[in-house]
Length: 187
Length: 176
Image 1: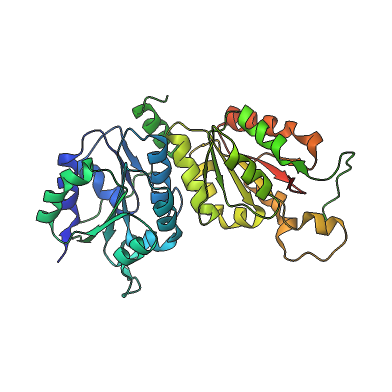
Image 2: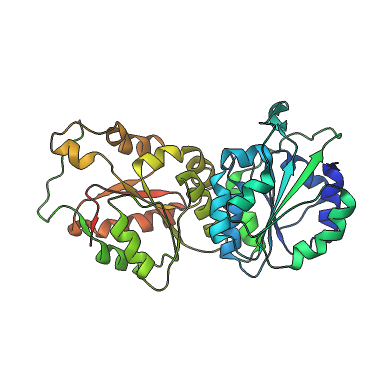
């Protein structure tokens, strides 16, 4: 089973209120189709594989606010140690949603190593709350809990995409940072 | 060959004095993968109240973590070896230089003391350290003895004024 990614994003956007949402890679292309929020943060090209590390730092800095990271399985493989650091320091307000499509979609769909089990990897790294959600209905049921229950949470979501991808937004990186800090009342 | 530095004070820096300076400068978080030369500083800051310490698994990860901390309103300092600096290149470009995040980097100069003593370096890390920082346009100063502790203040100010990464390179490590 799997979830159409844009449907998943619609569901998340409908429930999201004041959480920070960090996106990277293909999520940066589709999340803006469902959300335009001052606490959306496009991490594309900020450092390969490091969106969850950045999200961890944000979550540690802003304990009063949930931080949601939407990242892909290919990106996670670029920084697997992130799971260990999340397991060691991950705060209750961190929610990582791993969009598992088993490929480097952004670069043409090259397949990832087929036997990797991301749930097992995260549990083995010491992340406390790890789960897999396989369909949209289950995600919609579990989402209110994920948004309110103390974590950190690491959720594996098998996704597909049948929609054309919008082009990459060539926005200034410093402006992205300034916008988020303004959204947080820091500038 | 990198020229040696004339120094009147003993080589190396008192870890407790360096830690006190770091705390005085208002750093709130240490992101550090300690090396043999920084372990006493790492411990001094672990023991100090008022600063949180995070030990990532690799330096690029640490740079991104520190960037998130800063964007969220904290003031992190990143301690890493020059070998880790090389590993962290993409993260430093993407999470520091590009988005104008004023990361303070305290970089261990692995290989420098041995090279200055005329020994064959154990690897190729030391001659590339300052040229890499120059190539990235990252301002940097050397911290070789207690007499140089003022460079911490200077580089912290540079990072804040430019809103860009800036670095201090320590040549002889920190003593307990």
